[in-house]
Image 1 (cartoon, rainbow, N blue to C red):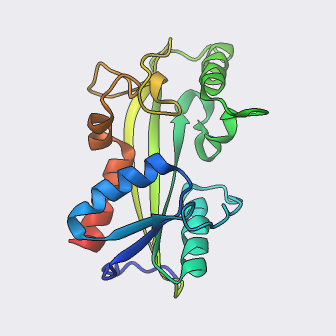
Image 2: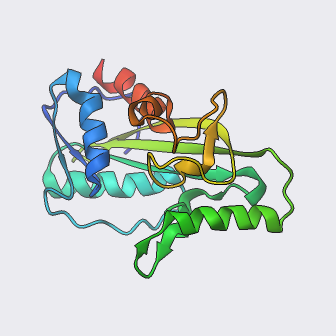
Image 3: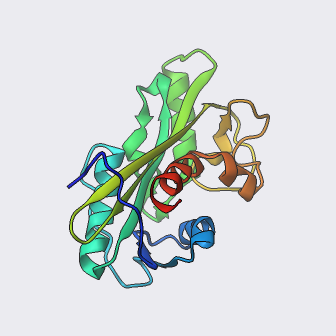
Amino acid sequence: MTSSVVRRFSCDRLVIATHNKGKLEEIAKLLEPFSVSVSSAGELGLPEPAETETTFVGNARIKAHAAARATGLPALADDSGLEVDALGRAPGVWTADWAEAPSGRDFVMAMNRVHEELLSREAPKPWTARFLCTLVLAWPDGYDVVFEGKIEGQIVWPMRGDQGHGFDPVFRPNGFDQTFGEMDRWEKNRISHRAAAFRALIDGCFT
């Protein structure tokens, strides 16, 4: 059940529906002022559910509700990705899939694919793009709330910087000279699509 009326978060424990330690650390830091104890789905031994939806909110809901049902605790999940306008907003929901390789995720390969497809389509510059993040906070009774954030920018080439992860080295946010891959981690976290979604979550449910 989803409602336009936002439910306040009144628990002292929260499950983060992720197996990514870096993401857990980032979220725990954001929630530190609210005295919430956070655990990840990975730490609790929960399996990763199949992400079968074709939207960010659909996949975030799958992860959040699976963790909430399994633990009996509220759970927070995010789904995020890169949209490149000249590629019909691909890779979008399939952002991580573009990096799948036999040996695991290879984002250098994925960034090269984006560049090659832009060249093959003779797409004029600037190659406008955005990162999107959707957060779903779900309770064990099936209720959930949704918050979204985005940051506009453009694809640059060649890759720049070795900070961050994913497509960060080829994404330069509007108003900045550096790519996400060149930015200090905490500077990026301050302005990112995930930061915008978390500000909305905190304003809506925690303050």
